Length: 288
Image 1 (cartoon, one colour):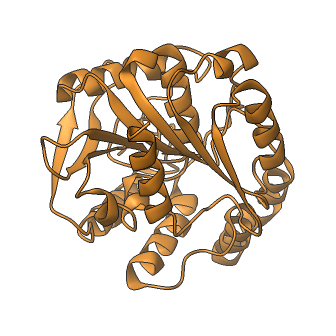
Image 2: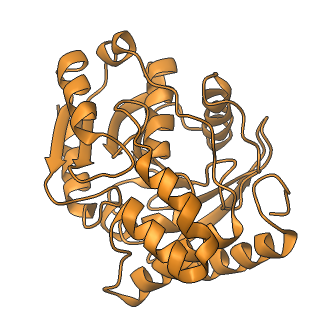
């Protein structure tokens, strides 16, 4: 957690590590913490659920870590062996490496993670950048992906730039500026439970100490989307200010008509309350 490239200071990295550890203490089901060697460095995985259940890999978004799944895993753990992976180069406990997204580096990294865990084939749930990584892996390794359930995945529809421009003005304004920027980007931060409040505070702290990716997200081409052989379920927020959800939906409907696409009116980039619908999608797809 001390890599100068992705954190603004060594002390900020330590602050985030302590807060993340505290959030993991709130993980709602029994868990194992795994430290896996890969060609990109160590990778941290939170494993829950029966060891002999079908594997389910979770990939969080940029500027986040596996704590984002704490509202979901209690619903999914009775049915799956959950493997919540801290994405490399993000503010979790994995290596700070950021290989190019427009390469096979992340697929090779996921190969290492799954091989170490003895997982030949798994379902994937991914959100935002994690959705793009899951989709890229499905394109490159279709034989290893049982099904995809994606929330606001990047790499399909157009990226929006207005929030990025606003962040240049807001982020120097301290806590108020960070909170205002995040509300613009994600919608209101979760306020309803103690766990969600802690997650919201963690998001604010991350954006105080963490350097986000500046790399433009590569787009998955039409031919690759059309060739996906596995069931694909995608949920989008119609009011997403980071990604053009309607463009995402149109591309999927045109190039991957077998995909199920759900566009939620009134929702932004941070989709909440989807544990049960996601489980239904996973179980329904498994039965197809």
